[in-house]
Picture 1 (cartoon, protein in one colour):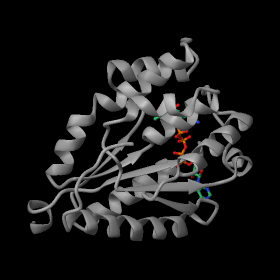
Picture 2 (tube, rainbow, N blue to C red):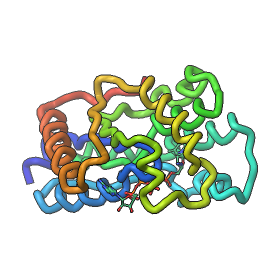
Picture 3 (tube, rainbow, N blue to C red):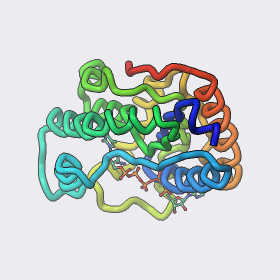
Length: 211
Ligand code: Z5A
């Protein structure tokens, strides 16, 4: 397949509040792209399968307590431990659909009151996404979707603070999608944006770094 031999894959990140539809939409994107013959994988952060990921998971489910800066650095380390694999997959022509990334890292930790520049610092040097699809939804609406589970950050007031931090983090790689639209409409918009981004990467857009 020529598509895969001569060009790199795209790094696509899906961000948004809890319940905004990231997981459902990432799944749909994966099967669509796969069906179109693209090389594609679906990733998510935190990656709970690593040792660092297990510490994060235990924190999120309230089984352990950690200092705010400590957990922030663990989330970042969880991305660093996957960085070289990420780069090699992209260079092999594989497009990655990544459910949450550094933007979640900074938005959630700074929503607790940590300085935003301090939060961004450990992310410097990670691969920069080619496209960030932000699933935009008011926190109240998100909370109505089946309600929140028992994880640490799943609280309405906190999600509101997170939404404010996400706004500050928007850059030119972002596309804002109205996540209150029907699932199929959200899906259609995302597909078009992702295919455009893949084509741009195939044409030789270089990989870059945060931040
Ligand atoms: N975190 C952090 O602090 N620092 C970091 O660096 C990172 C993360 C990476 C774990 O994330 C927590 O870690 C997270 C941020 C923090 N805390 N919070 N909050 P996670 O990825 O494990 O959990 P999540 O992202 O919150 O996943 P989620 O609850 O599964 O939400 P989702 O993936 O966005 O939504 P969904 O499962 O696709 O959809 C939710 C429901 O809505 C479901 O019933 C759907 O059928 C429905 N839905 C979806 N789209 C629609 C539309 N368009 N209309 C109507 N209904 C819909």
